[in-house]
Amino acid sequence: AQKITQTQPGMFVQEKEAVTLDCTYDTSDPSYGLFWYKQPSSGEMIFLIYQGSYDQQNATEGRYSLNFQKARKSANLVISASQLGDSAMYFCAMRDGANNLFFGTGTRLTVIP
Amino acid sequence: AAGVIQSPRHLIKEKRETATLKCYPIPRHDTVYWYQQGPGQDPQFLISFYEKMQSDKGSIPDRFSAQQFSDYHSELNMSSLELGDSALYFCASSRQAGGLGELFFGEGSRLTVL
Image (cartoon, rainbow over all chains, first blue to last red; front, side):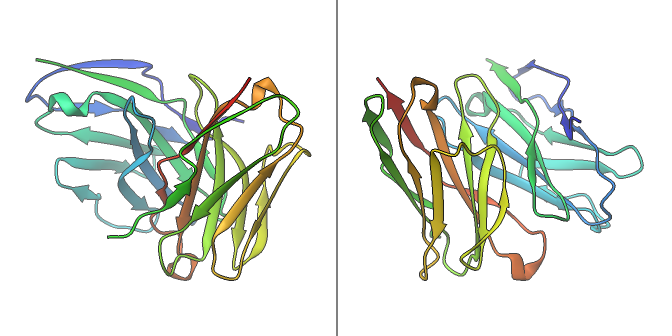
């Protein structure tokens, strides 16, 4: 069964605007972690933000914030003030209580000047 | 800050040859994961190690093996290489003692099998 679902294969955003990348997950574990990674065309996997299942507040890291809605099992990534360098593939991932890491199929973000 | 180091960054091999990829985790990280990402695909979990013991196994072919050494670095050994093994291989590390915390990836090793 799909553990991580990213329903947006591609997204476009105007430079300096905010964009939300969707991610829903499926787990019955009470303890899990949610991650977002950026993968530019060069191929490396860059860690952006982490949210633990027990964290009360939404995670924020600079221009990145994670909109964590536990009851809906969603962990959307919000990028504010988009920059041209934000154009990349974005992966949502979940680590479950058994330490398995599941990736979504990714969303390709294109920032338009 | 020190990151996850992978070597080599690029590797070209021929079919039926053997390849070894190395991963040096972030200092004090005790868990290492290996992932394989084919062209246009999301990363697929291969295998993981915690405190030098295999902790979980994913879709790793029998032709592949891996281990984690006393200094926590890990090596992925791939034998009888096939064309389909051409991919980007990622190593990631984390510190389990802190619970389900942040997971950092290396820059990947790109293997091309001719």
